[in-house]
Image 1: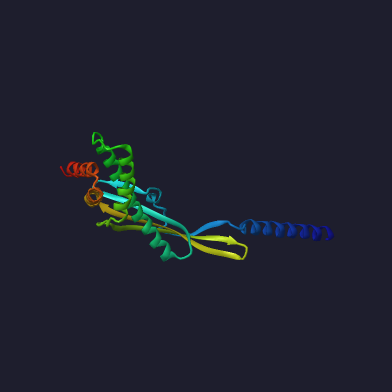
Image 2: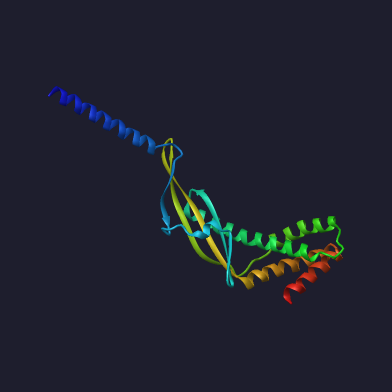
Length: 201
């Protein structure tokens, strides 16, 4: 009987130790677990800032660790819109540089005009035709010294027709020609106009 009592005490002690160890492991400060997501399956588009399918272009944006879901969603949409503007800026810069071959612009004139001009006109460009396509969020539980806290990872996908994207790009280059005219930069103006003509032919 005495041996049985000792055995029971050992078994109970081991059970308590294992239980405490398990709880301690789950309570590691900084540990994060996704406790909710919508939709249930993580969409593949959150890993791509840009994708083109047929006549539609898709741009995504996301933010992590936001304390409020609605704020996180607004920020994610703003990031997606920023990626649209950045894409137009990059495309306009590439096409402008490509079109300057043989335009006799000096490297200094070209570099200054491209960096200043394209940044200015695309930052102030109004982009039309964007439509919300899909949202995705994750609710994250994080263990802290004082318990748990909850934050959100939010992602937003917007779409626009290729024709709207090209129209925004055209307006960016048109504004570039206007800027060149204001600065009396004839070569840059001619280059921008020539590029506009090539894009619309």
